[in-house]
Length: 241
Ligand code: UDP
View 1: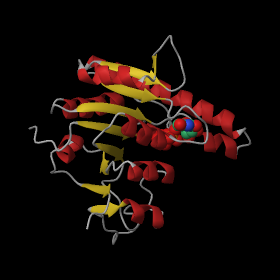
View 2: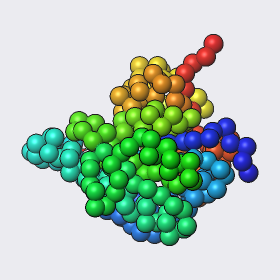
View 3: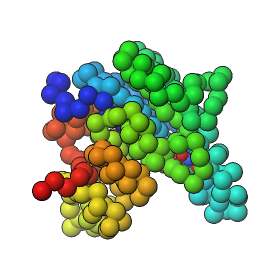
C-alpha cells in the first residue's frame, strides 16, 4: 500500500494520546501503540516529522490559572513535551524505527537542537524526526509548533491525531445529531472558531497552504487508512473555486 498522496507529513499528537486510560502522565503501553501507528505510516514510504504536546503532564494555562507566572508555567509545559518526545523516541526505536529528537529549548545531553538542514538529512536517511518544546517560546502551544515545523520542513500536510474522527458541527460526545465535516476551508474554521487547532496554528497553515487532516488516533490502523484515503477524517484546506 503506497498510493500515498503525500511524501512528507507532520504528525501532531496531543500529550493526552500518551496517557491511555489514566488521568495523567505517560503510559508505556499506550506510547508503544502510538509508535506502532507511526511505524505503519512510515512503512508506506512516508517521511515523518512528529510533534507531541505536553498536556498529559503540564499545561502553562493550568499553572497560570492557579496563580503561577504564565511564562514560567509555559516553560514547564515545554519541558513536558521533551519528556513525551523521549518516551516516543524510546518506543519507536524498540520497534526498529530510527529517530532523532530536536528540541527548541537546547538540551544537549538528551537531544539535538532544532537545526532544519540537519532534520532534512535525518528524513533523507529514513529517520523519524521528533520536534520537542514547541516553538521554544511561552504563550504558544505545540499546535503552533506543529504548524511552524510543517512549514519549515515543507510537509505536504499536517495530520492532527485526536480522540474524535474529525471536526463536527456540535460535540459528538453529547449531541447525537452532530455531523462531521468532510472538508472545511481555513477561513471557515477561523471565522466560526471551530476547534481544530489554535487560531495561530490554523493561520500559519493557511498562509503556507498546508492542509490539516483531523483524524482519530485511538483506532488501531487508522492513521495508515487515512493516509491511504480510506479512513475517516476532516480535511481543512484552501478553498479552490
Ligand atoms: N508550550 C509553550 N510554547 C510552545 C509549546 C508549548 O509555552 O511553543 C507550553 C504551554 O504551556 C502548553 C504546554 O507547553 O500548554 C504543553 O503543550 P500543549 O498544551 O500544546 O500540549 P497538548 O495540548 O498538545 O498536549
